[in-house]
Amino acid sequence: MSNWMERRREAVARAPYNVTEIFIKEAKEAMIRDIDGREYIDFAGGIGVQNVGHCHPKVVAAIQQQAAAFIHPCFHVTPYESYVLLAEKLNELTPGDFPKKTIFLNSGAEAVENAVKIARKYTGRPAIVSFTGGYHGRTLLTMSLTSKVMPYKKGFGPFAPEVYKFPYPYYYRANGQTADEVDEQLIAALQQFFTAEVAPDHVAAIIIEPVQGEGGFVVPSAKFMQAIRRICDEHGIVMIADEIQTGFARTGRMFAMEHFGVAPDLMTLSKSMGAGVPISAVVGRSEIMDAPEVGQLGGTFSGSPLACAAALAVLDVIEEEQLILRARHLGEKMMMLLEEMKQQFDIVGDVRGLGAMCAIELVTDREQKTPAKEQTAYIVSQAWKRGAIFLSAGLYSNVVRFLPPLVMTDEQLQKGFSILHQLLAEVQQKVVKRCVK
Image (cartoon, rainbow, N blue to C red):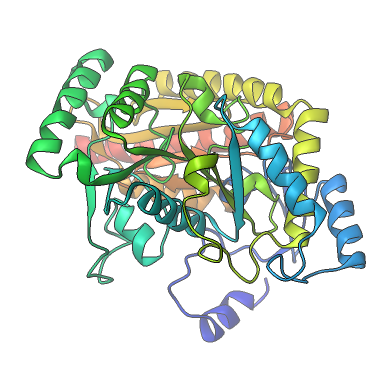
């Protein structure tokens, strides 16, 4: 066993969290090998970054070829073809039958910040509406939009002004209401929200995740998403879809908004876009994207040549290897296996997801739906020691989520979920013993 964790604690600030104590040596497709030679099945995918798999040969070759030509002239000084080619492709691929334009940035949070800037500039309005359970980043503005206190917000206030939160449809915790009843209630409540909290003609944008990521893979209905679109149209509000975690084939469509039949005005993209090379984007209606004046958007490293080359290769891989279809297959397989575990273990309260973006919510009591936070932490902390890397999520930290590379084999999936099965049996037994006592 290496002493790298001890050295990490001595040299690195404590705030950056580590899910595992693995120090990686190499990664290929859906497998990771550490510096001690042990292998792990990766269900985290760099937190949704490795949709095409670790070190895809085509992506590696594109990066190497670009690095040999030029690394960083800065797009604001000397533009380059790959930036324009990538923008053209995203303008074509993203939902919406209208002219679009794109700007590239470095991170998901930076994309969200710029989407808000663009919406405010276009509308001349200050307010932004986000949703309970939403996650949009860790900068001051994106932290203000985010809806979980610990670990993201505690002690970091005051937060950015003119940010308002509205409930997201969380059907599992709807106290016996049907999804349709929840939707109707929330849609009606939004009208009241515009009376009691913020006037609609004061709102520049509503930002929404088509599937809440850090919030626990909560999936809304098409009815709810379409209602948000109608309300934005009615009041001249810019609709921003945060597809940072859901984009690039993850949900069984190129972008998750396609499931709902809704085209947002602006989209924020990142994570799997560059297969690990930092890049993000805001894509949207041309007239909105062009609202900021020349020089008002950008950044030194935004849309770096290496990142653009990687992203172009990612789009090729998704098409050539039919990863959208693969995501659907993996999703169906995961949902089937997780539903089987729900039948076996009472601690599994809910199984949900969209495509290959799946999760289970753990509860110590199915009727009360009491969050099983400790048990979730135990599963995540033990899984990697047995050869599979899982992540937690959720407003109550009681969700185990799965973001495997879309190139994961059925055999790897089965082996990883057998580890999950063992761990669920262990925590179920502990909950039963505690109840008996």
